[in-house]
Image (tube, rainbow, N blue to C red):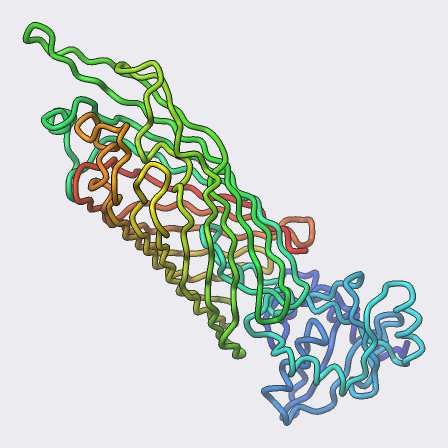
Length: 457
């Protein structure tokens, strides 16, 4: 290695580990691994990049760039980018996720290929590959910002991104949503207002959900996703009886636990630009969750639980929508609309109301591993159509189908953080309702907590 090259890379190495790190001229992320560094000049200004993929994406937009150089992965020497050879191998992960390392000779690249596998390309092939796959647009595993935590949406968002062909991701998430007391229309009401029309007043409910999901891209434009959840529903209630003119109150608890419905989804990329993209969200819900749960109540040793306590819909449900996403230097944003339509009635001659959701979010990177997020969620739920004949609508508000027609707006704040282990993103967000309205009596939602781990494979 030439002495000037040693000095040049040493200075950048010191900067990468100092308090003020050198930043990539394209993605603005800190340069931390000198083995993948690249350089260019434009208008007599020296530019540095944290990986060859950032250099390629930069010159796609700035064709006047010259003196293109990359770092030889084996020797650390600076070499001409146009005469170098490149190995794309998952066993040599580069900072921006394209897994590209550079070599001075084809023989050297092929020698490394024998050890690590992958594909050897020259400069022209590399450029064509980036151009044909729209590298750096709506795919994640091959996105030139893919190691930025802000690129990934808040943990409560599902189906917010596509992957490049062959890309995979596994997610494990936990959600809890406590409710306390009751509302009529948009106002909180006391128990006695509930007892005026019902024999039982719900007091508290906690819905918990554990979910595992997987994503796999069969092409750059189509990503498949499957989600399965396990639910735990707990509710405490108060039963009012009048004995000899005196009211008597009895508190009791019901619980339902088990697997919910299976969701199968397909994400289809339609628009793919450098700083924004749009894809369709399509899905089918398979009714695996039980709608026959029972528990002991003051009225029965084995009473059929109301709709809110059941674990699934009992019907095949179709989801259609779309996601628009964009990114800037250190921030990203997204808009997603999803509508779920119930297909027929279930075995108990009812179906849940159609569901419409709109999510708007923005994320901002604080460091190369930590980002914050803000999200607004608006949800509109329709009334339940039909009736389970075992349920008595005058007994408790949760047994009356018309009470499920409601609108709610929630505001969320969250974080995404890459862990010490490469490829694992830990996320959390908490949301508070800022508006709630129901057609009848419905429980008052207090907050929503979403947490999860995403394993980017």
